[in-house]
Length: 321
Length: 255
Image (cartoon, one colour):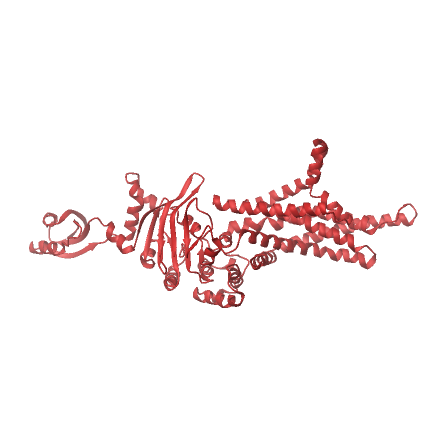
């Protein structure tokens, strides 16, 4: 449905997006993840035809965005980072105007506007001026605007930015409902959002794609080793844990009263839990806790976006800033 | 066409939803009224002198009242029109709504023509209000309507040129104040460009005289429709809008 091929965008000497390629299948939700300034917005702007690429091409619903912009744009809805609202217009006036320029036939406009308002729950605000709406409602009207003409493709740039937790949940639900009929690309720098809403993730950093996969696969692949957390009561267990076959490293991980916690790393693919528990219990020690430590998407994100700069001072800081 | 209309209507709505339209129309009507009274006063005095047999030629309402009135009114356009055009693109850029327009299935040309049409309608409304003053002349005197109509056509074309230039300048920046000031400066320069004619020698003088936006208006004010002036104004407007299109397009490339 969306095909991005070798997309490069330079602003003067600065390369904002560097040879980015990915595909989004029909009905899929693709998460576009990256730290601020990674090139997410630029990529989305090229996809939506707001700006032409320096190199490469984008095909949306079978139309090249650059060669047949009108056809491609008819099939796309776009919510930019700041919802593009006209403060002087009421919500209804605004949506009716958008319906007109998006090419919705005159007879259908009213119904489409009603439907979009209902879906995004802004019907109550229809007579309010866009300039007087709260941040959450602006975002929703922006979303209503994007899906007004029932486009095949929705491009949402940080759809949940600035919303309160309840609104975030509602927006995610709405995005879930929309998937299937629509192909969705959404960008975010909030990780749990990707894990919860997206079927596939593109991680982008400094204009380059660093990883493309499902959130689950990413979690699995990037764990080079399995790590277990073991909480033992009644004495030092470091030595006997290290003696378990398959264990590569044991590190103390805090003390809880008389119990001591350990992080036990083992080679991948080997389940050492049985041996670990047996080793602890057979020595007469108390096994209080034994659980796998999974790398959260957050850690993966930090790992992939900071890989190139290991050695530099506080790379993690830079990536999350 | 429907897209142009949609954008023109949106523009007009936002002019009238904000104080801009009212300030512009009110200011223009007020200053026009002031000129009207001042020139009328002069005209009546001349008339009284004429009545006392001190003036040879009879006074002509068109030549000696309407013409100077409208020439003076054009000066007001210098100040008022930048207020109309300064927001056209600058405001869309600042608020981010330009992203909506440029990602909608609408061509750049349709956006430009829509915005131009919206500004022209507001300008025409502004001129329309002054027709009331002119109407009064028909009640108490007997001016010829044809030269007046020609002069208004000239005003419309002159203003069209200013609007085209103003939109071009507005497309350069996201700051309305900067757009407004620059537009005013350029208008003023176009206004006085023929003043340096005598420095430039005969060929230079011909060029600056041709460029001067007001020289072409003088014949309209006399009631003459000369194709040369029509061509000047229409090509000026076309060129201005063409450059606006190029400016918007280059903005996309630069980001």
